[in-house]
Image 1 (spheres, rainbow, N blue to C red):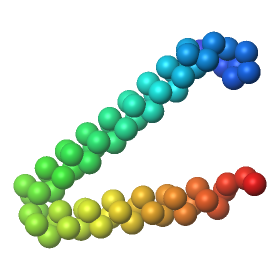
Image 2 (cartoon, one colour):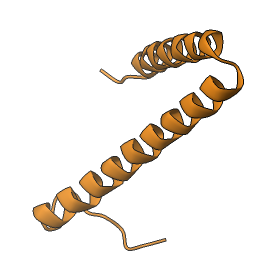
Image 3 (cartoon, rainbow, N blue to C red):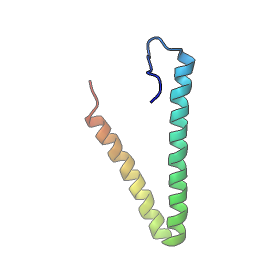
Image 4 (tube, rainbow, N blue to C red):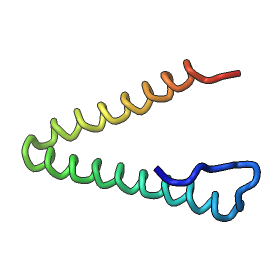
Amino acid sequence: MGKKIDLLSDNIPKLLDRYLSTGIWGMLMFFLYILLNTIIVGQGVGREGLVALVIIIIVGKSEEKNINACFKED
């Protein structure tokens, strides 16, 4: 574990860099996962597999938003 983060007193550019770099790496890994999954399914199963994959990704993302909304604090 690293040093504790204090959002009120730490250097703002340093905090921004830390959170921004984490977010960018996460999006990059998700993109690579989807890209490789699409290539493998497209080569192995074909058109029908790609359609199923796209539907699963869309439904999964909408369900994720619904679940996050359930736990949102007002």
